[in-house]
Every structure is written in structure tokens, then in C-alpha cells.
Image (cartoon, rainbow, N blue to C red):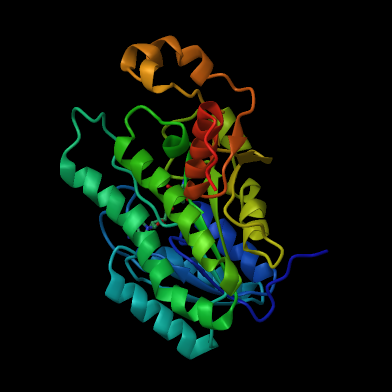
Length: 306
Ligand code: NAI
């Protein structure tokens, strides 16, 4: 069945360029009223201009859709609150929030100024937190909401020269994990996207041939799916070059060391067994790990926990 957003209000942050632009255009084509938010910053976060967002809005209007541009800096909560207030005044609700705005300040950690670390955290992590906070109560009251965090393989797996960016991007997975649990009973579903696309953010990292495969439009279907009524929740979806995959965090079964063997040397000698993937599984909340550990220890020690 077609995934539609008629009567739905969608905010896409950082949608003046790249991936956000592609998402915003597609939401509008599927009937959404779209807030095209963009500070109009350069790739490193410097400068301000409404031009990029205005052009995207114009394109949506030309295609017969509905959209409004907004220049809020996602790292500034007062500006974000004003954006949401204006949206509610205009269209009465916010159904979907796509936290997409981002910047890069790449350097090896040895050479990185802490200011560049903080700035990247401010835009990616705090920016997503600000936007989410500003719509959270509204979504709870509506008993409906879809939120997508934009994470990255650089956070999930690491990337040389991106400690700041990677930390912020993995923090968004942590934010999503708990938020999805808290939003579940209010009809709010929260997911994360790990995209790969040829945008100004990646243009100097790849060859022409590779860039051609990586059009942002090849990522957007994942966002539309994660923002739709039948979206899953608490998932990480990787998307790029038309490939879509689910990223899974799993934990090995683990090894119990009795009181007489509980030292670093026994951890070292058990390392291969600790890493054994047999019985490895995904956990749905932190508390599941506590239960798993208690049950394993109790079984080994012959203790009844109840
Ligand atoms: P882009 O640079 O083309 O677009 C990012 C947009 O965010 C820009 O239009 C910029 O003006 C806006 N922006 C920056 N700071 C802002 C702020 N404080 N408030 C509001 N808007 C702000 O980059 P791209 O590639 O489209 O990235 C979109 C998202 O996807 C980012 O979160 C990025 O980290 C993420 N991502 C991109 C990947 C890629 O391969 N392009 C890989 C993994 C993640």
C-alpha cells in the first residue's frame, strides 16, 4: 500500500541541501505539509542563509505541494521552539520529525580542538535533542509521532578523523533506544537512519564513479518508510546506493567466572569463549542484560532467584 502523508505535518531539519532536501521533496510529493528547516550553513557549520531552504520550498510549491521554510539553528532551543510554535500555529500539529541537520569538523583526535568536538556535538546531538524536545509533548498529546535520527556508519563502526562526528552519531542511537521505549505507549515511534550519499558532506571523499551511484534519492525511501504509519520502532536502518540494511547490536552469551576464578587472568584466558557468537542475541532494553547476567550466574551457582 502506498505510504502517504496527507494531512500530516513533517519537519525536516537541514533540508536546504543534500539528503534533507531529497527527503523534504518526497514527503511533499506524498501529500505532507513540510517545514523545510535550514540554517543555511556551510559544510563546517559557519554562516547563515535562507537561500537553500527557500529554493526547496519553491520547488515543492512548483510541484503543487505545501511547504514553508524556516531558518532555525537546531542547536538553539529557543529558535527550535519558535519553529515548532509557528508550525503548530500554521498547521495545527507535527506528525513527523526528521533530525537530519548536520555539519563536519573532521580532524584526527590528536589535532582536534575541543571547540570542534563540542560544535559537532551541539549540532548533531543537541540539535536532535532540541527538536525532539520541542515536539515531544505535542506528539504525546496527539498520541502519534514518528521521529527519525540521522546516525552514521562513522558512529556505529568508526571512521578515521571523525571522533567528534562518530561520538555524536552513536549518541543519537542511544537517544533513540530510550526514547523509543518512552514513546511507545503514546504511539510515538523512533528510529535511526545510517545513510550514505553523495552530498557536499562527502563530495571530497569519493571518486566520480562512486559518487554517481550514491544519489541522495536512493536513501530517502528508508526515511519515508521509517516515518510512515506502519513504521517499526527502535531500529537502525542503513541506506545508500539503493541498498537497505538493518544494523543490529548484539551481545554474546557470555562466560560466568565463579568466585575462585574471578580475576583479570581468567577473563584473559576466557576471552575466546567470551567472544563466541554461539547464542549471541539482541536485547530490547538495558534491564534485559541485568536479567540475563543474573540468570546465568544463578544457574551456574545453583541459586533460585525468586
Ligand atoms: P549537507 O551538508 O548537504 O546538508 C546538511 C544541511 O544541514 C545543510 O543544508 C546545512 O545548512 C544544514 N545545517 C547545518 N547546521 C545546521 C543547524 N545548526 N541548524 C539547521 N540546519 C543546519 O549534508 P548531508 O550529507 O545531506 O547530511 C545530512 C545528514 O546525514 C547529516 O546529519 C549527516 O551527518 C548525515 N550523514 C550523511 C552521510 C552522507 O554520506 N552524506 C553519511 C552519514 C550521515
